[in-house]
Each structure stands twice: as structure tokens, then as C-alpha cells.
Length: 143
Length: 143
DNA sequence: CTTATTATATAGTGATTTACTAGGTTTTTA
DNA sequence: TAAAAACCTAGTAAATCACTATATAATAAG
Image (cartoon, each protein chain N blue to C red):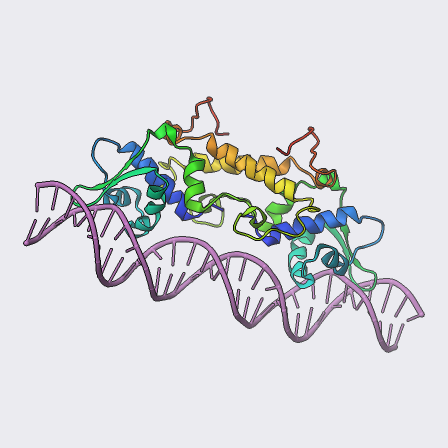
């Protein structure tokens, strides 16, 4: 399940995409518009910065802006970064120790297939797609 | 993320599918073969019973067997039952209160699309498919 | 140079969930 | 009658979640 961390990160990126100008956008504004605790966003946003998704400026009239155009970010990019991967089961998490049953496990290929399905879907949608409500580049993706 | 509950339930069902005969299979045997705590399985299996997936018999030489053939169960059926739904975000969980931002939320259609994608994938694979390693009815599903 | 404003860093915290274990009761068959 | 099995309920240590709190560092305007 995708937690508030990833969901808020996505909304934050969308907010920046929609309020993109030459100015930097302070987190305070985003927090107010999105009705999310600024303090919590402060904790999430460094992950996006370190991933190179954002330009930042400190101090007066500082804030954040997108480093690239909204069509250059897929939802998958943002969620993998903020959620720390999108493995649907612990078995596929890199941090977890390798399961000794992996070789004989009948379900492991299923989980790999699920993981691929999830990643493919989330990589098929960009921030720009979300702004252009419910439409992806290949027409209509949402069912 | 799918927890041990759902994963163990699936392995339990697969074990029953592979050791299906006229006899009932005691949980002890499944626990030993699958190397899962029997006490923990005892807690999971009532969910499968109540869903009508299993025939059970108490007492000496009692145990469990599948109520239907292995090709009649999809992985989605089993996981939705044991995990209590497969919503990828809290916003889509029936138990959660309705989000006041739903109408204007740019991301909600995305999550619905993801949920559909996940359900479609998991419903395309049956227990029998898993036993016939990595092949589904329509050829090769796993990537 | 000062002040306000912003980002950044680190630590703490209550509530919930997870993955079990423990101990008992009931049913069934040999 | 005894053993073997399902079934039921409660407890629990560890982890995770969704934040809050406090402090520091950088920047631009005046």
C-alpha cells in the first residue's frame, strides 16, 4: 500500500507543476493549498531534492521549482523515490535477506509479474498526464 | 504491500491443490511442508473457510481440502479475502472515511487505474496456472 | 548589517499494524 | 476412552506511520 509519504510527494510535485513560473514556490504555499502539514512535507521534500527532481533556494523569496518539465516525470519515478521502491511483497525488497525457498517458490514469478505490472502502469503516467485530467499520452489509460 | 497473511494463504491453497486427493489434509502437514508456523496458519485459515474456499473436517483424520478445482481460484480471489481488499491507497479503502478532496483530486483517477490494473493482473492467474509454472491460460503472462 | 524569511537537520512520540505465540475448548474417529 | 484434529480468544514484542518539536543555516530586502 502506498503511504501518505508517496501520495503527498506526488501532490506536492503536481502543485509545483501547476504553479510553475520563474519564481520559486515556498513550501508554506504548497502546504496551504494541499492542506498538508508543512512540517511533514519538510520531511518528505529532501528526498525529492536529492533525487534531482527539484531546484531549491533558501532564504527570503526562496522555495522550490521543478527541475524539468512536468511531462518528464513519471508517477513511478516519484513513488519509487519517496516510498523506497514499489515491491509488492517483502520477498522482492532489496533490503530484505534472500529467501532460501526462492528457487522452488511457485509464487515468486507471480510477485515479479505483479511488480512489473505495477511499475509499467505507474511509468505510463506523467505529471502532465495527471494535469490533463485522466488522459495519458497513448489516449485513455484510466479504466 | 501484500503481507505474510496473504502470501501464506496463497501458499497454503497451493499446497492443498498439489496434495489433493480424497483425504483431508491436516494443517500440521501443510505447516511442515511450507515451513510456516502452524499456530499462525490456524489464524489465517478460518478466513479461507468462511469464504467457502475449503471443505473442513474436525477430529481424527480431519483436515482441509479445496472445495473446487485449482483452476477455479484466482490469486485475486484469495488475496482480496485474506488481505481484506487490495486497495493500493487508503483513499480507496471502503473502511476509510470519504476524502473531502475526492471531487477535485487529480490523483484519485490514477489510484483507481492502479487498483484496476492490480486486480486484473491477479485475477488473470489461477492456482492451476501457478502449478503449471509461470504459464497462464492465455500463454505466457509473466514477463 | 540587520531582520525576516526560507530551507535543512535531527530527534521524539502516540497510535496502529504486523507476525506471531499461548492456552484453551470442541469435535471426530479408531 | 484417548488421540488427533479443528476452532476460539487473548496477548505481545517489534516495527512502522504520520506526524510534531526544536534548532541551525542560508539568503535577500531594506
